[in-house]
Image (cartoon, rainbow, N blue to C red; front, side):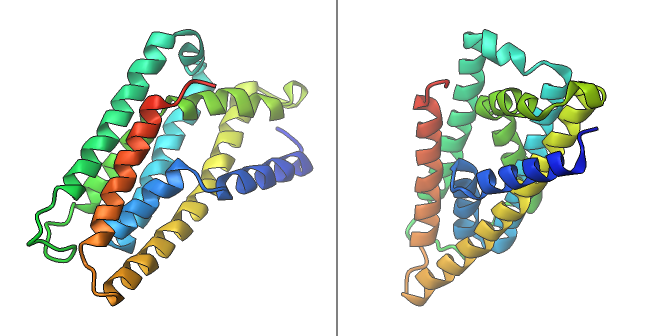
Length: 207
């Protein structure tokens, strides 16, 4: 296993990286805006579960397929992008007579599933683990697969609190909208954010 100082440096790098605003933060923010803090927190957990899926792929070496199979990469990317747009349209198309509080609330179990599925269908996450984790593996200090697993768990563990803080911030933003007399705008903003993320995912090129 890597030495403690090596792991501490890696954990710090992962925390800084996860604290930088990105698509996952925006996704959690949109869920908090649309359905409150519990939805955002559950979505953060769902993203973490999706991350663990990619950690497993990296450990087994299957993530390498995405690097060398452009067709598979694009298929997974478009599936994920399409699902994001679908979820966003569901929120934006809510009728004018409905509000955030009167609209049917999406069950938390379904929100957990949505977030996990979206992250699992994000090929960039798989490629990230494949490119980032090997830089910190020390072959002389034990099996590479176990080190991959440990490093992947650290990345996930540092991402979860960052996303949860975003979820709480999103709930505060939703309350601010409500204080301004608007109860539809949080949901419309949330839906538009999901649609934007889907379009971004569809147009993003593999780095």
